[in-house]
Image 1 (cartoon, rainbow, N blue to C red):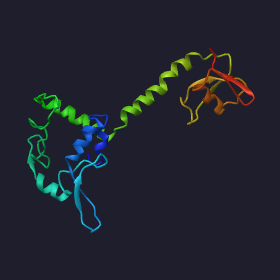
Image 2: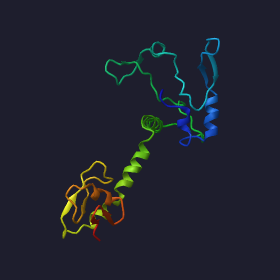
Image 3: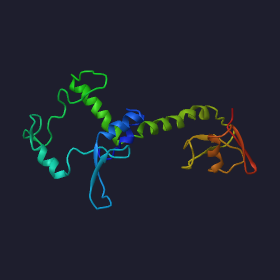
Image 4: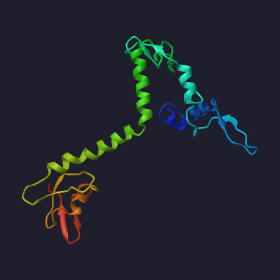
Length: 192
């Protein structure tokens, strides 16, 4: 969570105004000023989430060892994380089930680790949306050329080309283009 800024919450959980108000509640140590001293100021959208302890040693000391009957030896350095009232929902839903709280917290941590994951999955899904159309139209009357270039939008999809040497980059360009295209002196097309 130390790598997440307040601005990362805009559009995901809060509006920009709500996020600015949330960030302003946090006092951030900044500086040095013109006199060489550190000072505190209200938080901004570009500030990272505040850490609960000033350093790692203070965190270790504050968290000590906690009893956990499910851990070998019965002792672990992590306290029980999910307790009644540990999570507050905006709509006032009471967090009775620890499993529901665990799911919410897990989803938050997964998002914090990879905030761009949903966008990346959507892009990959859209890339392969046209694959069945390109593959269904193949006729075996012409020599089949397989595009294997890394620059292809759809790698390893077979397309039919006439008068183009095998492995020509022009065939790869056809996949994301119109059904018929002139490449150099040759006419390449995806058959109907």
